[in-house]
Image (cartoon, rainbow, N blue to C red; front, side):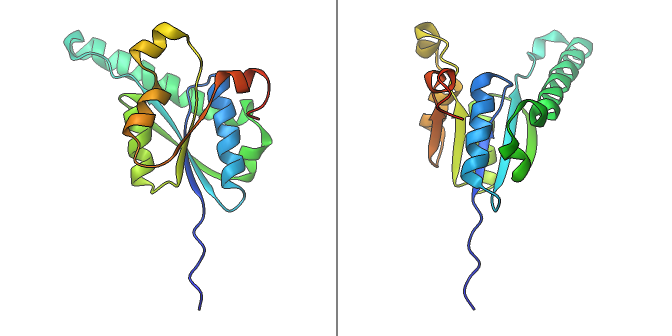
Length: 154
């Protein structure tokens, strides 16, 4: 009996931007009908010094915003996602670290992420896609903003 062929597993970062929507579309296409896509949205944790009531309120707001983005995703994306098995993951913490960790835990074949092209200052400070290229232990496909603008990523 031949071993079962492994289904493609792809992790994609999502923040609601055009670039992240394009990344979800690319991930769904690459996974195909047999594959699985894990869509990750990471939200920034509030600083500890805010105190309990303020920390809790801000944390709740950030979780609610992230959940709303993920819940609306199929409505703003393309039909490819609807033809693919997918799950969403909402995680508190730095986005690149959260995406890399989900990819590790889910034994993903690759990570797909959109680059928003926020300019040179942002590039100097770092970006999620740039950080992922340094910390990920598997291939990372970055969809550049220029490709999204000209429609080449979708």
